[in-house]
Length: 515
Image (cartoon, rainbow, N blue to C red; front, side, top):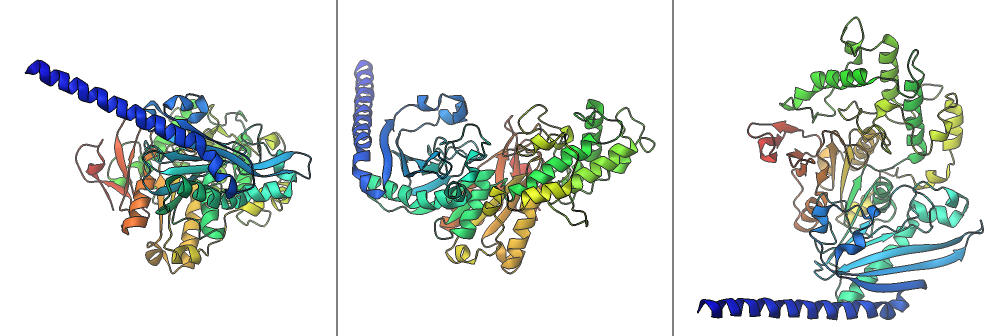
């Protein structure tokens, strides 16, 4: 009898495997033939489709998927294409490239994945801006675009001279690609899309805001993370911080604070602000409530080995206060003092204490500071037209739209305060924070650098599931549980609430409450 049961079990497993392989083969044929059936959806210069039945496609480094994410791989059909092919006024060839991923386990939802840097790269359409979960493997159909040009590197400005290319970068490429991608999804599944979402960080975060401001009918739910909202001005701020710290009398311009001083700044900051959330754990949850007094770190007031000179204290405070014009008008908001500002030395985006300018301002780092020169460059700068500044998003709201903002407090490129200031201005435009809570939320992510990273931070969080529940069930998120690299948890709280320790195991989100 036991051998019979064993044989039956093996037989069932074999049948299951054969059926699975048969389904995959059938899906692969449907997918590989699919491109021929969508030629009428746009004036494509090219369009191809191919079936992806293993995670090997994501083996290259720029796929940016962790082993944990790859373990959740599900097969999908990928469509790559291009349209609006033309010869630019600058003599270069242009086209809007796009990719759409169509999972076997489609859940009826569509997600557009935002770009990064100056775009010009067609990243894998996976929807990875969702914590440890990959939207594609969770059943979302996912689309993305290169925004209409090909870049040689992430901050290649060579397309700036072409009017249509820069307008596509501002947001038009997404607006043009979205209906094509939606039609592809609907034709593949022979079913209408149930709900439409957009998520992006950095440039993708700006694009997310632009969707709510300029194209309010395209998406019901939007996540804007660390948006490069006003890049022509944030680059001034990044250069200002680097220059102001580098010219402190008596310091090394490349390293205005030595290792002992950087540690002393962080230790002093933690001493003044860490326990405001009920727990001294190296993570400052109450960003807005942190009233840091740098003068307490000055030698004389504090004679520890890492104490600061009076000039260093003054430079530190000036730098973080943000740039002003010759009349004292604020050009770009201040940066918050946060426990991650000494992180990521030597990385592409080191903490502010390392005095590293942003990617577009670094060529002027060795020049004297000149605010007039900077403003003259910023006004009319090609990126300015894509700035996400409009606070009136009434049509998006009337459509039932919901928008979630998140921003790492230690982001050295784009101040979390800039995004927070926009959030408050937008709320004021629509009846104040209490009324605006029906459609918008803002989450600080303490310790997190630009989009991810930080020595003490909880930078893996699933904002997409929270948004889906809000859009589809009408349930506004009360918190978003986030994880650190070692698996510890904290709740991220919608402002003005703060993650507060209430007792218990400090590695569990349940030991904290949003208050």
